[in-house]
Length: 344
Image (cartoon, rainbow, N blue to C red):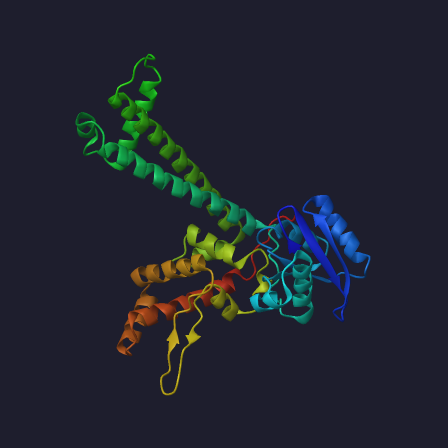
């Protein structure tokens, strides 16, 4: 299937690669039902290749999985092939089907209907709230820089928490003032009050989301919280990386590659060398990085390992890479069987 915002184009192929049918369906619940019904007229539908299973094709993938169809994530058409054959929605749909038929598309689509999808939504909300709060704090401090000297002196020396409480009272006081011609000082105090209220609301929202994420981890992956160096935020990041269907990951090496901590050979002649893996999920990579540096501070086993490898002539960067790989192995065996949530 070639997926878009408003419509999906589907192609049905036989086991020998012959095109049996091509059609377009709306990206609605009724359209999904019509698509599968139409495809089954040509025979049994066992596998489906869908472009964009994490975006436009997410809802379609969930529907097909619920109907017992194995869904595979298909990358976009090869550029060289596109230059030779051209590009159209029917061609993209055929290429998706051929990728599954030939075995090139082997990544199973994420189910997206369990606790990991819930965590993903909360994590997205938290990230945007943190970004907005940082922006509001910077704006408040920028207003203070250009404020009247008397107002700056009034607020000088206050800690961040007390500064926000004081500024919030400016907005409360302004609501009781009579309407009339405003001065610059009055407008500055009102602006500071509004910004302080916005920061407070965003902080409350962030705390609420963090509490929900902590409960989610305790319910579905409590084993992660027993590991040295893993807190709720790090655990949520790793759970999201694994996904709702961790059976997609064959072994610990595949999880290490997914996190970007698998060694990449760069050897030639007498020189034996492994370089940094710059691929994978960078959020998961950062989570493993936090685990390693926390353990270097508080975990005696990790500290002993570090000292031993230093004596062997390894650099700090090389040791950290090894420790991240070990952390990935430990995490994989803890999260490969997540406690499932209710299925819709």
